[in-house]
Length: 96
Image (cartoon, rainbow, N blue to C red; front, top):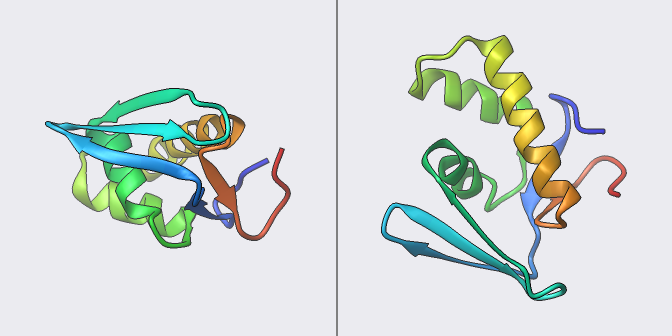
């Protein structure tokens, strides 16, 4: 389970490209395509290198009008979805 202390990074086998305001990703392993935009795109761009979730939340709360608690919960939920799909790696904890 991801926590604010988890360090996450994009999975290296995911191919991603900018398409207008969206990011389109494809998993080499599964062949599945994904599309994200807005805040999700910003999160994806931020985790190109290993990043602690709490640092990501700090960045997001500075850039968007959201309280830290809500931001952390929503960010963790989104990152967990990415982890479940094999799109990110956790550098300091178990992966599914």
